[in-house]
Length: 217
Image (tube, rainbow, N blue to C red; front, side, top):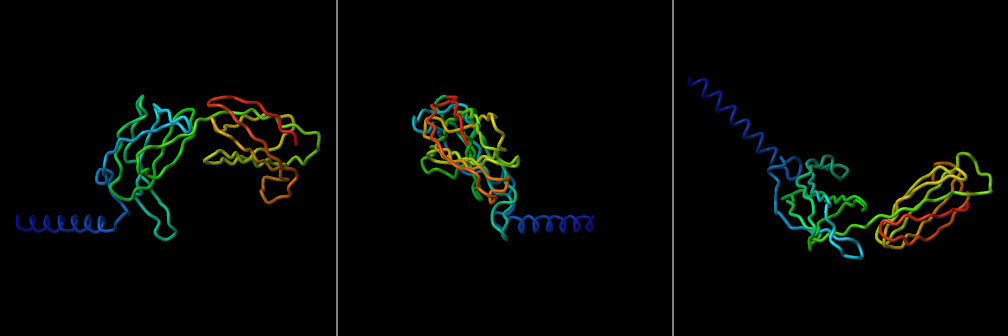
């Protein structure tokens, strides 16, 4: 009996020691139920109109394992998720330590990653679309590639498309704001290959509007 108690004591001591060592290094590993901090009421609104967005999925993440050599996060954990109501609000828990990011997703809006906003209000940009007809009378190499950047008012999106004459492509752009579209035609898919042509144009779509545009190159 004494031998059994001695073995149990040693086992408990080792477990406690391992746990103590594991938790003593801040930010490396934390069980999800040990990292719940403050619960906040957050609000999600639409860019420019400030209208509340219902049905938005709001998720907080913390970093479970850091890359101390090169920086960044090797493994992140989704801590808490809530969905906004008709007032664009919901309650979500934030990590007590090692906060990594916030993601917000909603159909017909651009998904976005955030840091913590001090006023707990977050803004999403609505989407719109444009069907582009690519048209040319010039003979380009079959390997030609378009590099397109859609510059909205608060973010931009890069797109790469193979150049095919008299083809169409639907692009997602930013609704309710000016979109400056800058394009380059390169000889290959390599952005450092010779420049064959370039240009830009501006679109001003309304929220969820679908425009048409012919790009002559």
